Length: 150
Image (cartoon, rainbow, N blue to C red; front, side):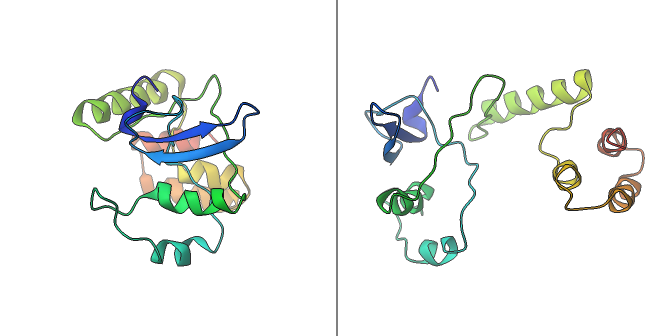
């Protein structure tokens, strides 16, 4: 990120191990923002209940992630070339994200962030279930892109 101080930031040791997670740091340890894509275990809801509001008056996901970091069970993956993270925290960034997604979907015929596609590709729903979902969307653009999966 060009402006990591706006986000939760991950710091790394020289060997690439995560050393810190700080929400909106004045002096970021790196330019790597926490993207908001988390896969957490079944203990996360209980852990979240123990959190208290930050100085900003919010429950911070970074505080939850710090629990895993302190237990050395946190696993962070850097997004490489070919990935895009789109922040939508401001009006301008929401418009940018919407335009980017629209361009990908319209020009390349790719779905972006489709739970139906993910479920089908991972075998969580059958072809028949996907067809039922497509029928619900009718002839709208999302339904048409889903139909291309078949």
